Image (cartoon, rainbow, N blue to C red; front, side, top):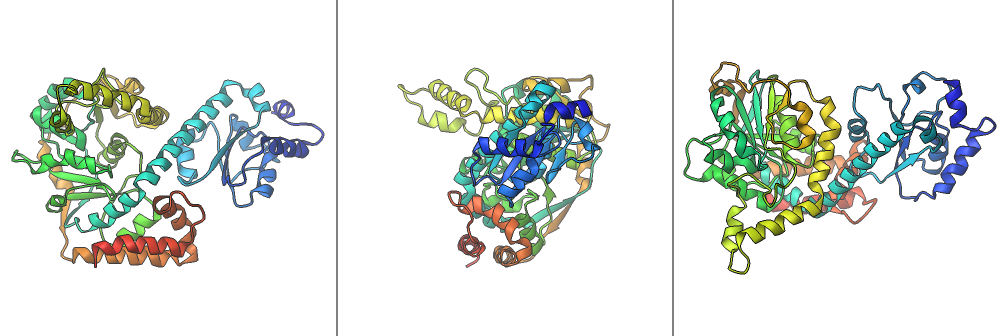
Length: 473
């Protein structure tokens, strides 16, 4: 190990060497989080602490030997190759979504560790790419999500408590490959629990399958088209709707059994505590299929099977048929702009947008940490190929209605409008508390003031009140 250290740092004055290296990078002053790639003994850490005293330093080591080596300067959070979490999982836990991040590689490490360092750089770059994509989404949808949140509080008339099942779960995305596996799912329908992305609801219905639970996380108004199937004259109806607290949902959903999903942020947790609404903790993942997998792992100890998770466009088809968006294309079709032309244009926009590639990269980084009970039914994106193991799609011998015993319906009797008031008062009061203000500002500022930095807590509280009062005054 001493030989490696000698190759990484100057033997005469490593502190000055690190100082000059950081100065040469010309790092912007607005950076408040650093990801250090194999910094060796960590001589860069005190340099960064002096120049950015409020910045967070996250370290990724390529060599676990530095874990026990004396004299190492450690950052605020440190990852080693033998850590339980993956590198991206570690970064997700340690880096705030609102952080302004800079990757800093200790260049001599590349000569010593080669591909190990390059892999850490790639992992970090993919994480930042996903972070920036999420930030752009927050900037565009932030205020709409906040309006959805306070509006949704009034919907929670029939909420659910749950306990873990032992029933196999089939998760259905809306990729084109879903059509091919519908017969296999239908054959075991009575002994599995089906958790469906809302965009797959119509394809399942045509295939003769009624899911036990539908999940919706999209905050855009177009997401409503997928949920209209709940209210069409078709029987039987799906049993449960699991929804993100900021999702766009029709007001008719207040009559359904609802399973609210809390993303774990401080402001959502405080609001739910103030209103007494039970929830399940599911972190934001950007795509409903990732949230569905997290939810399935939370709800069941049984095997989990994935279907319709293409994460790509098949020729000009982006979704299984039928789909909630189909009527939009057929309704606007003309002789000069036929339906297939519209599909072609949309498929090109999806490909160029790059969001599916971001989701695929997330799954690729996380797939190694999946329990050995997660399987692919085939036809999914290639990142799921290693999950195509020998495990037949079979139930546990129980009728699916046995799943009802794992959910307890709680009917609320309080005034719906009062929940918005209590939630707003709780969060605004916490914004005035030094113990919580910094965290709440970091969470709420990107949603309410996406183009500004260092927004005062009282200004955030004022904007929050303006939104919430629409739903209780």
